[in-house]
Structure formats: structure tokens, C-alpha cells
Length: 152
Image 1 (cartoon, rainbow, N blue to C red):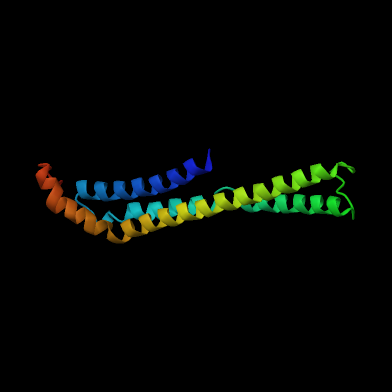
Image 2 (cartoon, rainbow, N blue to C red):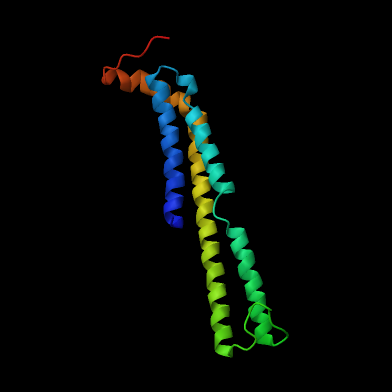
């Protein structure tokens, strides 16, 4: 899955679960449980944070590869996994490609952090104010829709 799509899904999933909790609580006449959707949304955002793209390992591999290329350029030794005599142009190309890969990974990590922060904020707000939103829906919206609340 493309990183941008993943980030959009994290935010949309958090908002959806939060809204579902408020609407369900309003329709069942249990507004005190409206924040539960927000709690689930925060858990979802944390899951995305901790089980997300393994950028740290990819950056580590790129740094190790970068060190190998630098050793080849300086001539102080070569990696056992690399060909012993690539041309200087190949070194520059490898070096540039590795730096570009690190730059792209850094950009995606920053975007993931923003998406996780946004999803966490959405979930936290619904967790805190979900009951208020559900009570407003019960008081103002459901009568307009002529919805009969279940009796408790």
C-alpha cells in the first residue's frame, strides 16, 4: 500500500470509529458511552504508530550500505558483499541513490508521524467530548428526524 494511502486510511479510520461511537451512543440512548469510539480510535492510531512501516530498519540498512560505498570510494577496503572494483562513476551513483533513499524514507516517516498525531487528536477529542456530542444529537437532531429513542 502506498504510504500516502496508508496515512489517509489512518486518519479516516480514526474519524470513522469516533463518529460511529457517538452516533451509536445517541441512537441507543446511552450518551455516556459515546467516548468509547474515540478511545478505540486512539488505540488504532497507536497500533499504526507501533506496527507501522519499519523505517528504522530500512534507514539502518541504507546507512550500512552508505558506509560500504564510502569505504569503496576512499579505497580503504571493500565490503565482502560488493564487487571489488566498480568504477568511480558507479560509486557516485550508488552514493546519490542511497542519499535519495534516506531522504524519501525520512519524508515518509515525517508524514506518518503527522498522520498518527492527527488520528490521535481526533480520537482524543471524541473520547473527551463524545458524550456532549451524543447528548446534542439526542436533544436536537433526533427529534427533527422523528426518531423514537429506546427506553432505558
